[in-house]
Length: 603
Image 1: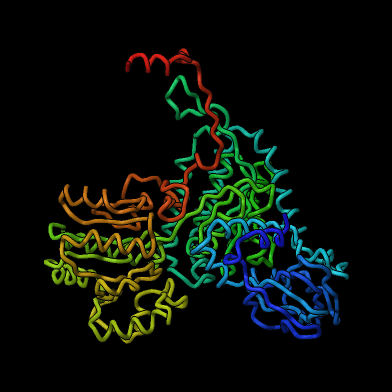
Image 2 (image 1 turned 180 degrees about the vertical axis):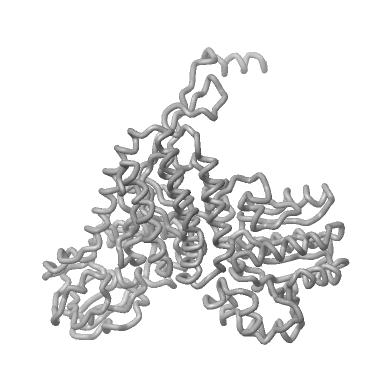
C-alpha cells in the first residue's frame, strides 16, 4: 500500500492539510529551513539544484546547476531534508497546477495526541521510504543518485555485520571470555584518555567522574559476563522440566547517548560479543570522533583473537537522522537498542524492528522527618554533583516534609549546596530555562561553579549543587535537569506522595524515585504508590540505580516500563541480548473432559 492509499483511506479529520500551487509558482526556496515536506497528490513539480553544500546528501556530487522534474502523484518533496533537519537543497516550482498534502511537526504532534494508531500506520510507511529512497524513484533524471547513495552504504554496513555472525558462532564461551577480558583491559589502560576526550568533545560532565564511571564497566560488567554460558543449554535455569537454550539475536543497531558515549558503547559491545551478536553503533555528532577511536580500538582486539572486525561497526559518516531511521528499519537489523532523547527513542519504537528503549529520568527524592538529615544531604549532593548531574537516574526534585525543611536546607548547605533565595531563584530561572520553561541546551552538563557564576550566585564555600526552591504550582521546574540543579519543595507529610506522583506524571515516569526515612510504613506507602522501576531507600540515587550502592544489576540501559513507553522496567542484561528457547518435558496427562467433569461437580 502506497502513502497515497494510506492517506486516502484515513478519515477526513485525520488527513494532513491539502495545499494547491498554481503552475509556475515557487513552492520552496533553496536554503530555507525545512519545516515541512509534501506528498504530491496531483500535478508535477520541477526542482532546480544550483549549489549544494551538505556533503551528507547524495546531491553533493553536483557541481553545476541541474534541473529535474518529478513526475506523477505519490512523490515526496524535501522528505529527506525534513527528517535530517537540514535546509532545503532545491528550489521547487509547480510545473503545472499541483495539489499536495503537507506534513509537518504540528500534524505529527496532532496524530500523536489524538490518533496514535494512524500515526503508527503513517510512520511505518515513512520508515520504508527512508530505507528505500522511494521518494526519488520518479525523477526524470536520477543517474546521479548512484554516485553517492547513503542507502548503499547502509546496506553494505549491515551486510558486513551479517557476515561476521557465523565466525562468532564457532567460538566457545571460554574464547569469548578472553576477548571481553582484553576489551575491558585496553579501555582500562586508557581510562584517562577516554574520560578527558569524552568531556572535551561533548562539552558535558567532568573527566574525573567519567573515569570512575567507565571503570565500573571495565571491572564489574566484564566480571558479571565472565564464565557465563550464552549459547545452547543455559546454566542459570534450575527447573529440570523446563530447560532454557540461548541463541544470538543477530545484527543489533544501538543509539548511543551523548551523556555516556564510551561507557554505554563498552557495555553494549561486551554484551554483544559475549552473546555472539554483531553491533552497529550510532553516536551523536559531538561524540563521533571519540566513538570512532573506541570502535577502532575494539576492532584491533578482535583481530588479535582472529574474529571478524565487523563484529563492531560505527554508522558511516557523515550521518543524519534519516540515515539512522534507515538503519533502524532495515529488514536485516534484528534488534534496536535506543538510549537518547525522547523523540529518538519514539522513532526507534516505530521503526518496525523489535526495540529495547529507555525513558528519561526525573527522580523525585522524598525526605521524611525521621530521616538522618545529615546523611541524606551528603548522599544527595554527592549523587547530583556526580558528572555534573547528567546521570539519568540522579535526583532532580527534592520533596521535604515541611517540619524539617529549614533544618534540611542547612544540612544541604553544609555539604556544598547553594539553596537560592527568592531573588537568586528568579535570576536562575531566567538564565537556565528557555521561554518554553525547558532547561537550555547550553546548561546541560556544566559544573555548578560555572552555573553560579553565570547567575551571579556566590557563597563562602565551593558550590557543588544549586537548589531552586519551588512551590507545588511550579511543576514546570520539576522536570529532568541534566545539570547540577535541583528543585526543592516543602510540603505536608500527607501530600508528599501526591506531589511525587505528579512530578513523575510530568516527566520521568517509570524510571527512578528515592526516599529517605526509617519508617517501614513510609517505605511501603512509597513503593505501593509511585510508578518507578527503581525505588531506592536511603541511598544516593545515581549510585543506587546503577547498582553501585545497591544490589541492583549494573546496567547502562534501564527500562521505564509502560509508564515510560518502554517494554520493561528491568535493567538490560545479557539475557536481553539472546533469544531464549524453552524445552519443556511432559509432566501432566491430559483430560479433555475436564470441562464436562467440572460441570457435573457443580451440579
